[in-house]
Image 1 (tube, rainbow, N blue to C red):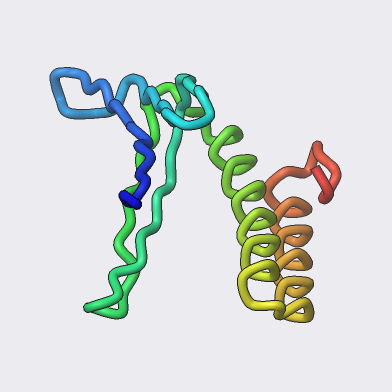
Image 2: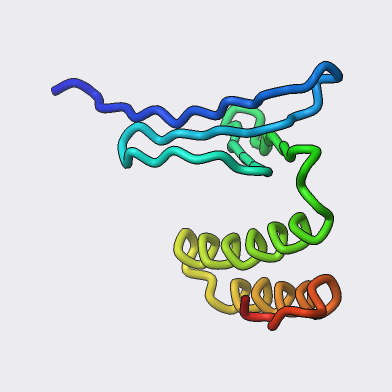
Length: 113
């Protein structure tokens, strides 16, 4: 039986100064396709025991959007960490930090959003 693979594509459209203007992504399996203003990609390098990352955002991304994006990522990381490790107490502390972050960075929004 052959190994199955799936492709996820990011196309970063740059201006003359190499600054991202638009980020398009597509996941071939789910048929998902969209344009976004920011992407954070983290990859674990087993050989180096280190995280490689790509952080991209377009010049149209506002500071308020970036704050909301990071808040949502903190909460998502807590969920993923708990599913991957079973460490509920630490995940709860990460969520507490997410609430603290929202309180100080997103004063017009509720911490759970």
